[in-house]
Image (cartoon, rainbow, N blue to C red):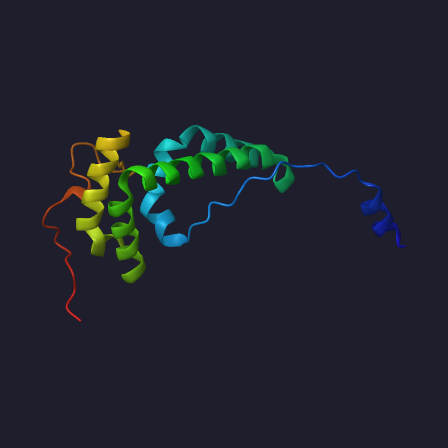
Length: 147
């Protein structure tokens, strides 16, 4: 055995509790992204603060598990309370190259359901104060393009 192999072999292995994967593809995550940002804000901020302290991936495993648990909790609540709207929105994103503007009608119904059932509101960071957020504009200048 080389010295580097001996060093690895002698290091104690730390047992990390397993956290189940979220089990979703990119379209459902994009559909839930703004809600995840609001719902898991504290855990996300802790994780990012931890990462800024030390770039070693093992340093922030505990915070990363908390983020994953929080995301799993929200996705489960979305499926329990707004399944049809959630499926319609992420399905639309999946079929339209994950472009939000092509899926505004499905997004509006999801946003309404999330507010009514879970009390969560979609807020886009950086939206100018006093201006209507783009996802609430009824007749945007940019509409569907003819193909």
